[in-house]
Image 1: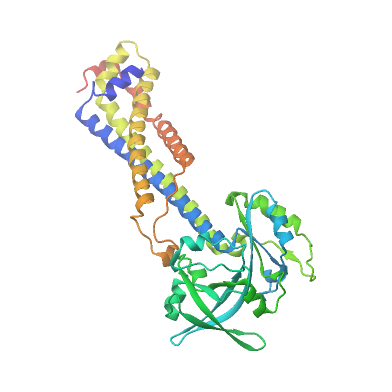
Image 2: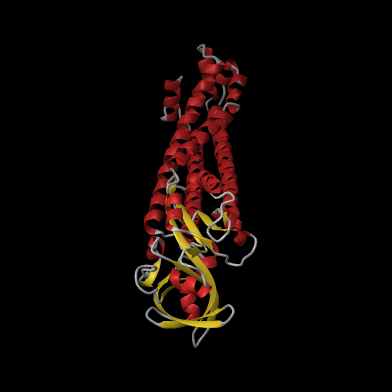
Length: 411
């Protein structure tokens, strides 16, 4: 039966209508798998890119004062070197870095902006900011000697304040009294994360600690960077157990919020993308299935005489149905092949050139991200092939209704 199906597929028994039906069915499957692969790879790439950017800015998990969870008072917590080593020893933790936050205002002759000053020290991993640096350099914060008077501004802040790299700018801090500091703009970066870029600048952690009246071992908290985002549940459970009802040297309790708890709106939006992808997958599988069903019915009807002759020679309905199922599988596989080739070509072009752009203000990214998920591509191909073959079982039963005597005279 496979040999017969192969002969029909290669055109040995082809007619004009069935040849067109085969081409349309192949194109339908190819377009369906093309859309599905691109949807999966773009969605995964988008989610990974956004999650990676947020984690690079605030960490996957934070260790902070428990008071900051319900009161935005910037309460400090002790984060000693030994505590950082204890956290780093946990499985799945790649890096731990300390930070200190205080509010202030940057002012020039042209404008002013209220924002957070994010103090960092020598434990800070500046690779993400270096990759997104537009001009200048990333200062070496927290190293030996006096605190650095340099700050790192986002492009949106630099534009609003009309300052450039190398210029000095005054900052004002309001607590019990008004205090002023003069900083040097050492670099300008752009991450396209508007919620962060427009509200935060980077400074030396010792400067922020002094402005806040904290001691050397007091910080706003520590950011825990993980090896893999998928291990966050495990590491979060370990940290929660480690710091449960644990007090620091100043009688403050620790808390360990996760990044998806700190920014639930962003992660809810990313989760919603999964729903959209599922809808696209179901729709495209339905399109491919309907196209194949229509094409197969045309092929069967055009080969009514062939079916009658085969039955007269002793072929059973089951054997004839298997012929057309083999034929359908060949058409589906051909469509999958072309769809995969075109989809992968388009994905690699986008990955290499970034030719398809996005609006950073709406999507946080300047170009469409792509992640080639091998397992995702394999699974969607298998599911599409299986779904198409299953829906084609029903139309093949048309074969059993064809009578040999009448079909041989069929025109």
